[in-house]
Length: 501
Ligand SMILES: [Zn+2]
Image (tube, rainbow, N blue to C red; front, side):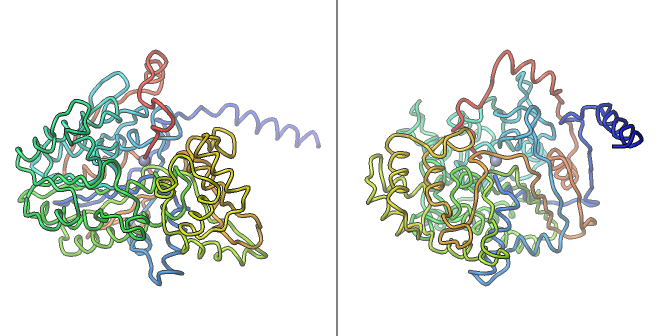
């Protein structure tokens, strides 16, 4: 290297060293505005949804279903952009911190709902909308008391305190609560034996538990809990005949009840189990929950067309997994074959594990993969699955994966021949959330921007505020303050398996 080049290199190195350390909170802010107000607001959260999930669903819909995604049409023609997702103290967020960023407009630590690490309460956006006279609805495929919906209406330092959150919902008094989580409402399942279903009924809610009851009820206010825990995956509802309403059917029940309200409404819809499917590294469960979300999206855009005073804001809270369709074969010509093979997958790993029980043999495992995943496992692979289920010996070793059997179930059916897929060629980086920016898109009349650019997730709060003309600020906590508090008293995240959604 010449002396001149050396000098240049050292100057450059010096420049890098002199750059200020950019903190998460102080990051570059792009704050596009809507330019108009709306009467109604629908926030559609795709939980744990990455661009890789988008790419797979888009390709599958085109190749195997002969249609384009409603989401693809929305992204092509309406304002969209990216959001950064980091929480106050981590570049990888979880759903409550992400939900708080949307709902409260400030960064928080992972684990609490509309609350700072020191216990300072934050006002969630739907609480402000309710004060303004808006009807409120929450519709989700997770337990209805789960982090993403809950962070929009109540404060609680522990996102896992779902029995308590059920009581907070009653006090809050939204018009519609639809999702899973009967065990947080039914007296025989709650630890304290309180009958929250009776309490809701007494407060004037129609309480429903089946798709038939949902379609039959005339109640104007609704509590629907359609499963003990989360609503089963779409792939199981569709192909295994499990009797729960689809996300679209729940949205269909919610909309007229909210739209009849004289002051307008706010509704959060959550496709909450895209995240869970990604945690499990289950490509078919991820795909079908994404496609089910798309059917609900189709219905919502049609509602907006008929009710132009409504803004639809679609957003993912973070990526999870991430399961990516990777290139295969010479010139990647075989890539799509692996995608087509998803057609043979007719159940989730969750369903498969239930069928296999706690102590299956290799023959039962091979039969389950053949009939439910369209994959012919080899004996050695089946044995790996047996040991994952019976002995919790997870593969591959290492913190990126080994938190639950499903990750091993997915790993057991990975591609053996990289140039000729005989199994879906979808590779996973982990069974956890990841840090990548995710989608934000808007649908409504009179929107100015086509490219919203890269935003912070807290900007969702400002966009919602502008849409409804609601202005307030929640207190901000610094990263340093939060780290001090966390050092003294760890909050939330009791176990890696709690890091859901
Ligand atoms: Zn999430």
